[in-house]
Length: 535
Ligand SMILES: Cc1cc2nc3c(=O)[nH]c(=O)nc-3n(C[C@H](O)[C@H](O)[C@H](O)COP(=O)(O)OP(=O)(O)OC[C@H]3O[C@@H](n4cnc5c(N)ncnc54)[C@H](O)[C@@H]3O)c2cc1C
Image 1 (cartoon, rainbow, N blue to C red):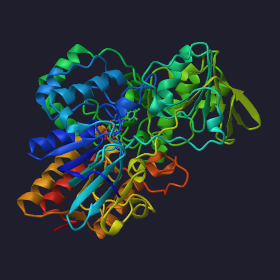
Image 2: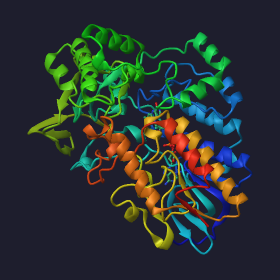
Image 3: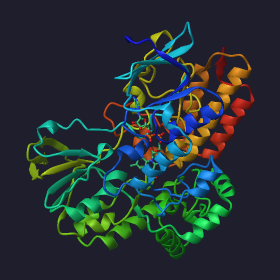
Image 4: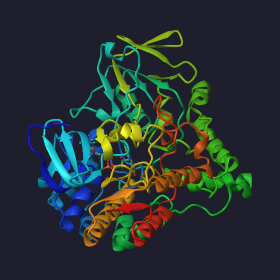
């Protein structure tokens, strides 16, 4: 690594100014550390800065998807909708930056290109694209679990004559599809949110679907004032109850402790219907074993397929939209009018599951011997999840160990927080943690507190470095897979497994169950950081 400018030094460098980076900066300053955020974008907000596609909104209720670290903040902020939309979430991120005076600790337009651990000095040297070099004792990667967009290597993509939009790199000025023929590739969460709105504008919309999505209604609407008042009367208690939930949210409507297999068909129908009417992720909690037992799961899946057949008038379209995989195995989508969009005469569905897209052409694309023409192309093709941002860096640990070599067979880590060979480097919301299966803000706050406590421990015990050990790492990765193997999560090809990226090693990356995870992280710390070497 080379830099003309000598590195500027701080205690803590943080990569990313999404919710993770903002929270880490605030906590570091509270602990008296000098900290700096390096952010490639032109403003704060992370996910909610980049994902500006029509319909982008949170799928965990706004009253839950927000910071708990400040009682004043959570009392004064007012969400307008049950599920906040992207502009409101971005306003919230900016409010947090202003409210806690964080802006002077954030370098914007500062893309980190690489970082190397200097073993003699026990410091990280961090290079940016255009903001010189920085050096720090600690490096916190808050670069996002879903922030490295996946642009599939379609043959001819660059030849397309019209504009190409990736949902995660959406322009800042409004995109108007009025009168245009639009092609959308991808029907994961982003596609499911965007398709109904693009359908309202476009002259013709053709959706290219590789895997049909399960979507449950959001029933979004204005935030109920009585609900808001009740939560705010004891926000701390509400947060605590949520932290004891498996996914860090949903304490208002916990999973039903019954097995789906014990209910009669009529009871099941009524139970599924009741949760469908409430909407959101709680549908998967209709029975306790939906994500644990394939037979229970099949009952929930069939209920949703029944809904698709009721909503979508054309039987062949309904058949193509009906997923066959286990429900919830890929992230469940929470929608507003997704299936109904296919009743519009201007919306067409093309199944590319058996005949993939052959090529993008100047006029559209070809698949299965047919050509489709459109004026604009939307790629709702998701992310190189959990590992993408780190693997795109020139990141080197001890003895020049490259992260690409370390993670050749998958993202080895301990507690989802640290990597052997990369001392003093912490990962926020990364692989091996529960982040992807939780309200991510709960996971972020947990990681930030753990990291801040860990640094304080090192300082009070006169230690310069902390590093995961290889045996702890191997055991942890085995544990993550073992937990998943007791569920239905290994029965499909999901981004949790890295299956959406050609050539990515198959390794189940997120851990299930926030409360036991948080307890285990606390236990490790209580025992002087078992599984780590402190030097
Ligand atoms: C469309 C969408 C909807 C989502 N909805 C939900 C939801 O409903 N509930 C939920 O819990 N989670 C949701 N998520 C997950 C979401 O990513 C997290 O909730 C949360 O925003 C993650 O915050 P973060 O700070 O960890 O990462 P991010 O918000 O992704 O921020 C990472 C930041 O790091 C920056 N960065 C990355 N690499 C570099 C580099 N090399 N140099 C400098 N800067 C860099 C990026 O520009 C970005 O600003 C959603 C994600 C997406 C994409």
